Image (cartoon, rainbow, N blue to C red; front, top):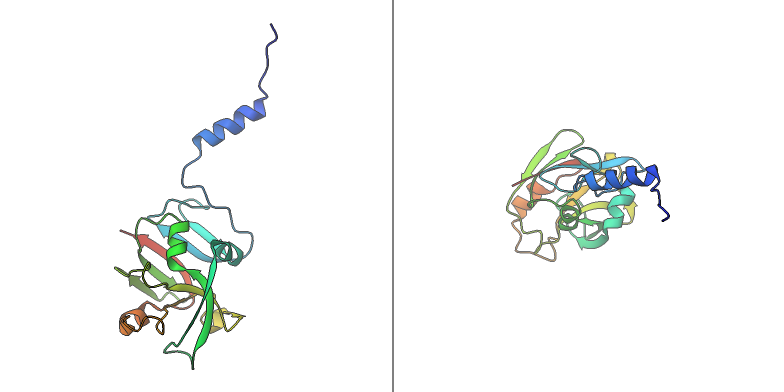
Length: 170
């Protein structure tokens, strides 16, 4: 009877896959990291953190919203990834999080219905990439014109620009 031998490299690969943590599902960023997501999340790519470059965020799926804001003139076109889609991509345990900017400013977002109100992490404004000096690389934007019932003061407080980090909590 002919015996088959299994190549050692195959056994090492199978052992690695069998012991790989469930939270290691995200690819690593190739470009400059513009967002870190931490806290109560399932999918990471650097220890307990999910890091994203611009192209990774774009692959989640971008949307466009046209709306007024208190910080711009007239209707502005924003393009970015919906907050709910990002939270889904990292396997967030809830939609409650602290958002922190490049300069250390932070705001806590709690009990906001991201399903009913498609807030986005805007990466572009009127077709131009948001620069760090101009509210970029990410700006949390709410569709105020499409949803006038939104509490404008509350969502204005949540409209953090120069977003760099999100920490999800229950």
